[in-house]
Structure formats: C-alpha cells, structure tokens
Amino acid sequence: MIKKILLYVAVAVATFFISYSLHNYILISIDNTPPYNLRDVYIFHLSLSLFIVLLFELIIYFLKEFKDQIGFLYLGSIVLKMMLFFVIFRELLSTSLQLSKTDKLSLLIPIAIFIIYEVMIVVKMLNRAD
Image (cartoon, rainbow, N blue to C red; front, side, top):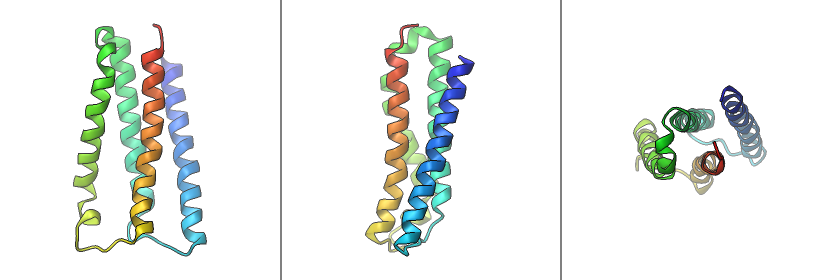
C-alpha cells in the first residue's frame, strides 16, 4: 500500500509541476496574466485530488466491503470539491470581477487535469483485484 500511495503522490506532484509550468508559460507567451494567482488554483486542486485519492485507497485497504461504493463516493467527492472551490475562490467567481475568456479557461484547465488524474486512479483502484 505504501508503494501505491507514493506512486499516487509522485504522479500528482509531477502532474502539478508539468501542467502548471506549461500553463503559466503559455499565458506568459501570449502576454496574458490572469487577475488571480494561478498557482493557488493548481495547489487547491492538487491538494484535494491527493486527499480524495489517498482517502479512497485507505477505504479500499481497511474497509474492503466499501470497494463497490467507491465510484459513488467519487461522484459525491467531485460535488464537494467544486463547492469547496466556490467557497474558497468566491471573490474570484463573483460577478464584480470581469474575467476574459482566457481567464475563465485558465480556471477550468486545472479542474480538468486533476479530474482526469482522479478518474484514472479511481478506475485503477476499482479494477484492481485485491
């Protein structure tokens, strides 16, 4: 289990550094700086994605009878993650701040990247024969 957890953490951190660096480089190259800290958005998604993945790994390891429910729990975790995102970044999402299409897209990219990461790991967990 420790190897799996270290692998999940390594993949998540690598995903963070590669995607954030590439995203930031592209924004700099097109001379577009969003009115928010892009690094904070990425760190938020990295943290919660790791929490979700590690929690599910622990559930599968210690509570094997809930393995069949992980898919449903994951769907609920996505909703909670988005609600928490809206609470933490509410100033950013308020109507008083006018965001360009590039800025809005820059908010959605980390969401998509880390949802893909989570889905890949959760599917591997569900397909694994323990």
